[in-house]
Structure formats: structure tokens, C-alpha cells
Image 1 (cartoon, rainbow, N blue to C red):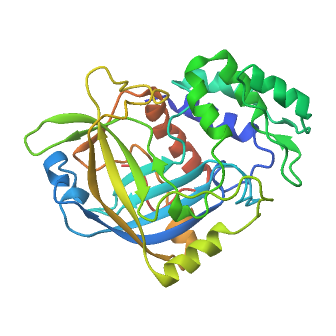
Image 2 (image 1 turned 90 degrees about the vertical axis):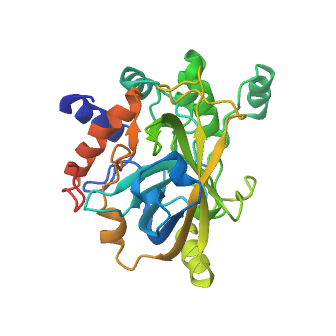
Length: 337
């Protein structure tokens, strides 16, 4: 685990690169909505993991969907990473968390990479790129920058693309960000936990795994050529859940020898075994957003017995960084124990 001073530097590096930090709120994924639901494990889940929420009994959950950008402007229609943080309310106050985003792979391997990325990926004045320069980018097999959205004055992509040009390991994650688009609904996007975890089965066998949420309704994005809407995701989710529940399947991919276990920038082969671990049913948007969303401090290293962190340096760093962020927001009812 990184020390407290490094964790504080990590959080401050993020804040320093924001257009308008919001004191007392999350520095990124600032805009979010809390939802209540229930998780029921599949019949085979217990054979792979002894964690309490995989025993087949219904488990109460709190989910916070969010937009990736920091700040209070919602910008639902902008191309942006979306988040899905899930708290499984199991025995005791601690619970078990799973934090996932629409990004399939991360873009840095360790803390040093992250600090270097933040030096290069600074916000820049957004200027419309002429067609002939975009054509030149395509000839060089580069992704041309998109045109700015209405009222978008700063570019958050260009510095990241420069970093990707210099660091091959970052290219997959950063290119995904550049092309990720906007979901039609929070309930119609797939979310990936990106890191490797270890799960233990009833016989004591440990397996490296990666988790993802797959929407039962299918993945669907808005029209990238249309003028993006500023706000629609909250209302869409409320309307959807008033009519019927939304469901996600929790998928667990099992790693094999030779797979990257400590590097979230590297994907695993598509042929790996995937197990359906259970169904999440989202029932309603919470009436108390402060208690059921903003005041829950999710942490990817808060795990039930039976699930363990890997040696992924970024995952280890997130433990301390999320706690620093929690303290900066004034604490919350779910402290790390």
C-alpha cells in the first residue's frame, strides 16, 4: 500500500488538473446518482467463491452511477467514462465493494506512471481542427481529435493522446477513452473493474479473476453525430425504474498462466472462461441521495472474506487515495476497518 503522503499527492494531482474543483465533493465522478437494488448469486457462484454475497441469498445493494469528469456541470451527452460503484451490504458495517467503469483497461501501470501522465495530460484551450489536418492524422494512423462540444472551451483529450504516443502500454486505455461515447442510459452500458482479484473456492483453491457488469437490456450509445444533451441520464434512470427493474449480470473472467495479474493496462484473451456469478436487480432511485450515494465512500479494496486484492500497484494505490478523498469530503458512515 502507498503511504499517506503519496496518497495525498495522488488526489491533489487529480484536483490540480480540474477546471473547477468542488470542495466537499468527489474530485472526479463528481456527478452521480444513488440507486437501491438486490443481488442474487447464480447456482454456480458458490463453487468459485466463498464470499458471503455469493451464497445464493438475496443481498441488499447500493449502487452509484456517475459521469467521469470532475465538477458540477453534468454534460451527460459528452463522450466520457461512466462509473458504477456497488456496495454489497453483507454482515457487519464493512460490506464489500466493486468499483467499475465503462473503460475496459486502465491507462497507467503504477503510481510513477500516473504522476507522469498528469504532467502531460493537462487541459488545453480547445480549437477546432481543420479537415485537412484530420485527414493527415488518419494517414498516420492517429485518431483525429473530435470537434468541441457547444460551450466546451478546454480539451481534456489531447494531452492524454500525446502521452499514449510516447507510451505504448497506455494506448489501449486512452484510445478507448477517446472513442467511448455517451450511453443512452446508465442501465445500458457495460462496466469493468479492470483490476485482477483473487477468489477462493470452498476447497481453498485460489483463482485470479476480473469482474464486469453486463446490462441485460444490452449496450447502446447515443448518436455521436447529434448535438449532445446536457442532462438526461438521471431522468432516464428514474423513468426506467418506475416502469420496471433494470438488471445486470455479474461476469467473472478466470485468468490463466501467462495473463497479466498486476497490470490493468493489459487485456486478457477473449477465450478465457467466464462465469455468470449472479444478477443485480436495480429497483429504484434512492429518495435520500446524500445518504445512499454521496456519503457512501466506496473503496475497491474493501472486500468480503473470500476475495483478495492482487499485487496490482494501481489497485494498492487506490486504497489510500480513496481514503484521502473520503477524509477530504468529511468522512462517511462506512469507514475502512
